[in-house]
Length: 70
Image (cartoon, rainbow, N blue to C red; front, side, top):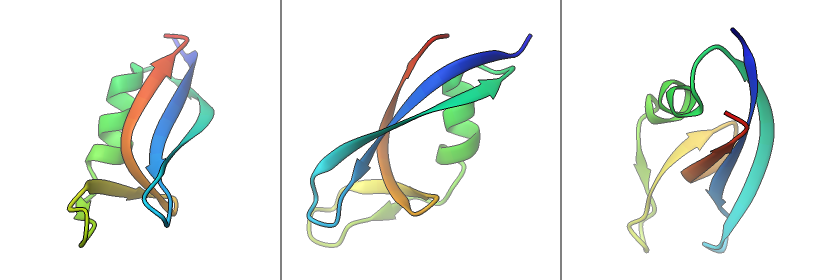
């Protein structure tokens, strides 16, 4: 059964601050499955100065996520 989940991606800004970007996804899978399939499957990148690891997704530098509605 498909369900709507709200995914909040924690992303890095140009200055290194963290922002939250939320959106709805219709999925048969759990939110964690969506994140691992769409984000964690991408090659990880690292910021040179801070050394923080992130994943590039639709132009965003994603460092973490949270889910609701599942």
